[in-house]
Image 1 (cartoon, rainbow, N blue to C red):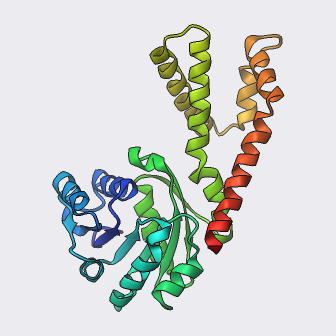
Image 2 (cartoon, one colour):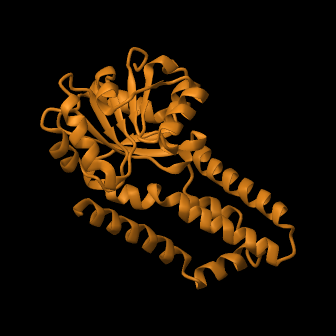
Image 3 (spheres, rainbow, N blue to C red):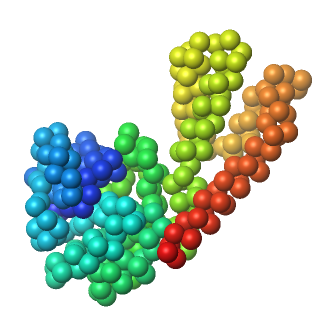
Length: 271
């Protein structure tokens, strides 16, 4: 599907590097078909040295070589990137944006009508090829182009297609979700230390507990509440711990976190 494509990355930060690594690890593309432009020359040199990708001297050179272009730049830099890129899209490549809070309408306005555009919300576990990504297509994206976009992001984890109206909620849930879980992990580790465990032991136990629990939910297909009940004995230690969490309103706090991040994503889309 992607084997005959040339893919360009405008922005060679962590997410761009993760996608390059994923594509190469999955043998979906060879390094001579991956192109990068970054305003920081040393970053391009690093990526070329580590992955043997092709580097471009400017956006126009990169755009002219590629069938798919990934915009991996910060939202505040998007306007200037779109203005430059617009001048080099006569061949109508697929443009995928991973900038948080930048809607398809802004991308279309910046690039012009007729360009196939896909808005993507990945998350940071992409750096270990375990991302959760959601993709929303613009009006000029064909089914075949959407499949190529999904294949690109499945190289770094799971990827699903959603309607754009859900993208702010996706941002609040899976986009920001790793930070919520890291805070939970940090708190559990500190709890272990409070109870006398060496910090490294507590860390190792918490990390494996999170990994194993996620895998258990994924592989059994059971509702998390069902699995929770299986390990919660009457009068046991787990129910006492759960009672303490419920007293601290953990459910409401996590739900409100998703809501707050979603609302902020909507605000960013209007700025």
